[in-house]
Amino acid sequence: MQRDLKFKIISEGLKNGISVTCKKYNISRTIYYRWLKRYKYKGIDGLDSIKKDFVPTNKTTIEIENALIDLIKEYPHYGPKAIKYLFDELGYNISESAIYNIMKRKNLSKKENRIKFAKKKEDKIVQSIPSLNELNSGECWVFWVNDYGYFENIGKVCEYTLYDFKSRIACTRLYNEVSFDNFEDLLTAVAMPVAKTLNLKINYLCFFKDDKVVKQSRKNFKSNVNNIISDNGFNFKIHIVLDSNNDFDEIHKFKNEYTERCISFLMTLINDSVEFSLLKIKFQEYLRNYNINCKHIFDNEEYSPIEYHNKLTNTKLILPIWAYIDRKY
Image (tube, rainbow, N blue to C red; front, side, top):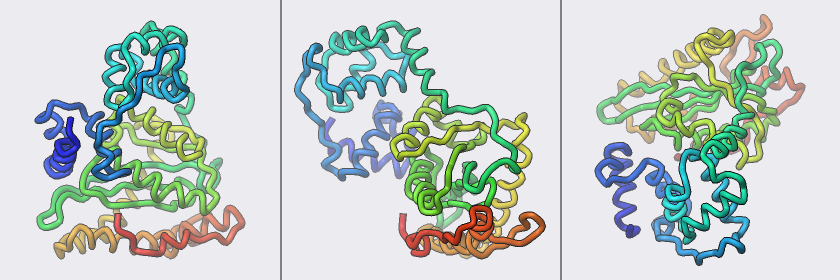
C-alpha cells in the first residue's frame, strides 16, 4: 500500500474514528496503530514499505528470531501463515516455510506450545497488592480514564490519570479520545520521567477492570503494558482492581476524591467554551498546584502530595523543571 494512502487512512482515523476508518479500508486496528506509530517517529517517510532481503533458515538473524518470538507472545494462536502476514507488514521478506522452521527449532510449531510459552510472560500479573499502610511512597500507582463527554466548541474531553496510592501525587493529561496510545503517552512522557526524577520505586501498576482503555484493548492489554514497562527499564507488576478485591473500596475512594477536584476545576473553563488546547494548558497549571500546594490529611497532619512524599522518603525533592513549564502535547 502506498504511503500517501496510509497517511490518508491515518488522518481519517484521527478525524472520524479509528474503528470506522479501519472498517472502511478493511484493515485491522493493529495495522492502523503500527502505521500511526511509524508516522509519529519518522513522519511521512515512516509509511514507506520496508524492504529487507530474504534470510535463509540456516542463517536467520537474531533480529528476525526476536521479532518472531515477540509476535508469538502477542499472537500465540497464529500459525506460520498468519505470522507471515504480520512479518510482511513489518517489512521482513521471509517465507512461511522459514517461519515454520524457526518455530520448529524453538519447539513452538504446535499451537498448545505457543500458548503455554506466551503465558510465561504473565508472571508480572499479581492478584493483590499490599495494604496502604504497608506501601512506600511511589510504590503503587493506579490508572484510570474519566470520559467527561462531548462539549460544543471543545470536543470530547477525557482525563487520563496515573495516581500514587500512598502520596497522592498525580500525573494527569487531557485527551480527546479513549485509546491505548494516550495511556502510553501519559506513562512514558510524564509518569516515568517523574518517577525517575523523584526516585520512586514503582512495584505495582493498578487498573480498574472496567476502565475504557482496558476494555478497548483487553486482548493484548497486559502484554502491551509489559512491553512498555520493559522497554523503559522498569520492572513493576500489573494488578487488575476488581470490585471484589479488598483494595477496591479504598482505591475507588481516592479516585472519586481526585475526580471531584478535577471536575470542579474543568467545568468552569468548559462552561466558558475555551479551546481544547487552552484547556490542556490551564489544567497543567492546576495539576502543578495540586501536587505542590494542595493540602491533604496524612497521619493527622496537612501535607501536599510532594511534601508528604518528601516526609516519607526524608528528601527535599521537587518535580522536575520541565513539569513547571506549560508544554503542548
